[in-house]
Length: 230
Image (cartoon, rainbow, N blue to C red):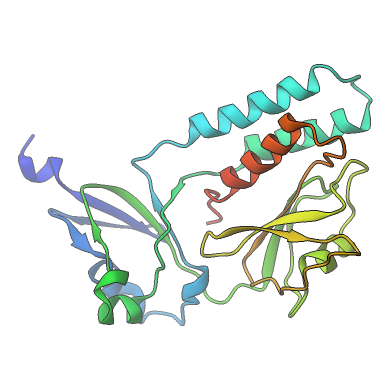
């Protein structure tokens, strides 16, 4: 195998394959597709397929199993945890790279135009989404219509939650991959509006402040940052 083949940069952009024989900058990778549609750059996602995240998924599943084993099968918490396990198992995952993807900015600002080294990458570009993804302790995880100016609390009011859902906060992952915790309790409500294309993750109620439950909630949210939606 030649040195060139070893050092190649492979990029999948919305299912189309591109290959470069040497490191290449983000702007150059985006150039062939940047003007083909009116992309909504804040919801564009960049993944490094050379990094495996399956170990991270396995650790989350092991945490769920460790918590479920002590519960009666028909216990509400056990049912909620089994549903969460099923969701985590079904997620399509790839290692998210925290780089803003924006062709115009990348062309003008070198700090927003990183060099892609040898490896395999995926870019998911999208027009402005009109959905949010809701998962965790909800009865029907999936995609829901985006509500302009709605807060995390308003979304959790609009979906059926499981009996053991956390009432005081949700995790929100904005389309650019930023993970934050939004308070939903009536005495401490965060009314920050959610961006289109965001994920909301409803945690397990950890009213006993069980360290293992708090850890599970955080780890599920961190894993969800790596979800692939197209």
